Amino acid sequence: MGVVAMPEVAPTVGPGFLPKVIPEPQRPKVPFLHKSQTKKRLFPNKRGPPRLQDGNESDSQAKPAEKERVEKEDVEKVEEEEEEEKKPLVSWRGAIIEAIQATESPSSAHENDAAMPSVPVKPKDTAPLAPVSVKSVDRLETVREAFRHAWKGYKEFAWGHDELKPVSKSYGEWFGLGLTLVDALDTMWILGLTEEFKEARKWVETELSFSKNVDVNLFESTIRILGGLLSTYHLTGDEMFLEKAKDIGLRLMPAFKTPSKIPFSDVNIGKGIAHPPRWTSDSTLAEVTSVQLEFRELSRLTQDPRYQEVVNEVMRLVHKLPGKRDGLVPMFINTNSGQFTHKGVFTLGARADSYYEYLLKQWIQGGKTEPDLLEDYLVAVEGVKKHLLRTTGPSKLTFIGELNHNRFNPKMDHLVCFLPGTLALGAHNGLPDDHMDLALQLMETCHQMYVQMETGLSPEIAQFNLQPSDGRDVHVKPADGHNLLRPETVESLFYLYRFTKDAKYRDWGWDILQSFNKYTRVPSGGYTSISNVRDPVNPGPRDKMESFFLGETLKYLYLLFSDDMELLSLDQYVFNTEAHPLPIWPSPPI
Image (cartoon, rainbow, N blue to C red; front, side, top):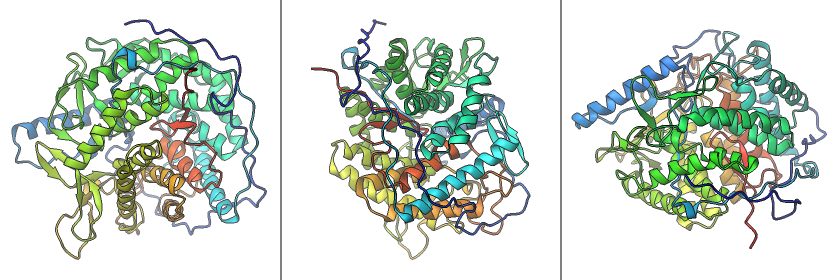
């Protein structure tokens, strides 16, 4: 692979460079709300029957053995479908819902790669947050209180471990790298939780070590750990976080040493050995195309081109692959051949979602200088409209379904609710107006996935009613009714409010926060996933608080309620798929 010339480090900081470091936010001088303003429901202290109770159900989560078992079942299901098309579309709910979003950012030829701009000298602090209105203060304080309550449980029962199990007052381990703590670092800084941040920083500095014999998932460790460390470095200017980011980034590089240059799914960060799951040589498309923002930024900061080269090569390969349908991509890719596998199934949900998200976001990150990324994103949006877009019979809600060997399935993962925000972000950056029109329609649908449920919380997967009737638009299968405290809807509400200033999006987010407080809050500390959003009497606590609840969900709610539109301006930052803001690169000098 050719060597990319590295630009010199910029001598000064100015308007043409990165956003300035965000100082420790100064909290408004208002009484702190020791209790949420919403009336909390204290559910029975018994656990529901979580099927993946010990595994991360976010993107490609779950303990390795469980993850492999469930994923193997998924592929076997796909293979059965390919042999017998009469069967209904595979439900991916058991797939440990891997990469929340997938990205096939097809960077074009080497000459079209975004040049890595130089790294500015550490910027100076800016002014503290501007005062906010009384109504916003109430909501901001409630988000802070929710974070403190979640942190209380984590600190008391799971400190230094990956995840809190709030009902049993214990913890779950996945990588053994303090996943919740690292994922929440920038959230604490943005919320102005000074003491919590200081104790977390001390743990990262003195206890977080990547020199251990453990397999980690390339995608999950990139978006949560590498992304979290890079973001926190940019917000604080603290070099310690950058050094930790360099350490983990280097240890993840063996994943890219494959015959095809499509990375393996797992890396032993202590031994420097990467491998696919034991039962297949495939990787999921979302995972291999949703690490680009982080690795590209690591190259820019370190002036070491290797990180950007390996992820750009993945995008180049995916860009030219046969097997797409009007820009839509299959969910699996083989690490030996570099070809798509299990073709014919197209979704914007698990295993493919963040491919589309990162196409747009890489284009924005690189200063809009990589035309292949933009082209693939625009073609994919048209493919979505052509093949996956439908409206419900009862209320004419617009939704995104799935395609299985030319057969449409009116099934939509909650994960797909990232799309309204992504479409709106594209429209904000000059893409067609009808992208914003579609964003507004899909935002209403994602809102309805909450309000049509008895708990006010969305199921993991919704089935939409295509028949004209006076009935419900949204149906939920028994196995799909769980809620994992996911962020995608509040993420899109944040984007829609930023771009439209329509207060209804804040109100919708507030309703969701109140429902979280009523049905998922555990009295002793923490919040739990629940098994049944249709049962407000016994929602079935699953005894698991995913790290993204602190890393994403509460962060997006806070930004949604903040009156400071320059707090993490969307003209200066691009959020990775785990809600970690990374700077948009400055334009190269003319």
